[in-house]
View 1 (cartoon, helix red, strand yellow):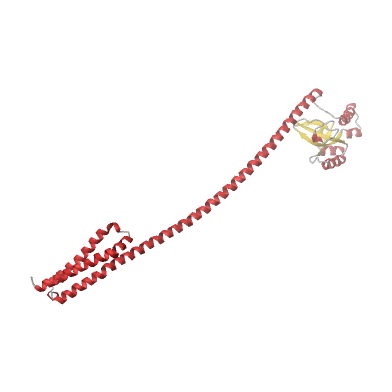
View 2: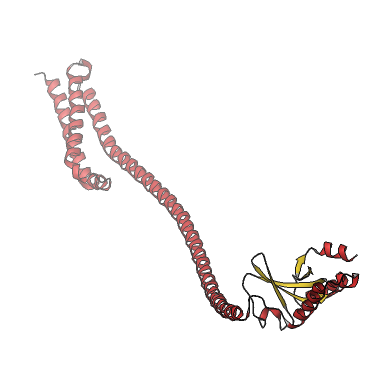
Length: 303
């Protein structure tokens, strides 16, 4: 083998060994820790093998270049080439590690920022959900409060209805008792004053007195104050202590009147008086020979 070629090979081998020595020294001093911080400590053997293979390829390529290029087979030319390759190796190996380290740190920082943004978004969503839940709870509380109030009101109304039902049952019982009493005395109850007036009118009618004064007395105006589906006792609280109340039945109802007026004017005055006493629904009715007739017809007959 040519002496120059041997020298070139020696230079390449020296550069190769120097690069490997530098790499292993730097790696165990600094590279391993950088690699560990990048969370790749489990694959450090593979990483070492990859770097050694890359250095070997570079120097093998340099060897081929020297073997097939005569101008590079000179000592200083070969030495310069190997020196440049070795220096590049010294420079590129740490630079690649640091570049990879900073790249991983940047990726990690980006992941942290994204995680923080995601957490911030989730926190805002949680706050919105919490606000909606609190609003729903408040509405539910208001709804439950309304239900409680309605239940209390319903219970109160139920108690009041029970009281009214008891009063109604008591009134019906008393009314039935009075009806039985009235059935014994007769189907029609005529109070003292009205009975006397109508008895006189009936007597005059039966005698056959046909003068105009007697005809006018056949028509009487009364004031109807109460109408009821059941017969009322003469001492019923609805009469407010009135005396001389007269009862007649019409259309399946018991109707009660007061007064015994001979003209519509007096009956109207009596109506105003009784309405002011609390009988707001009092109105004038007309009777002829004990039978009800329209007020207008009675007035026309009198005129």
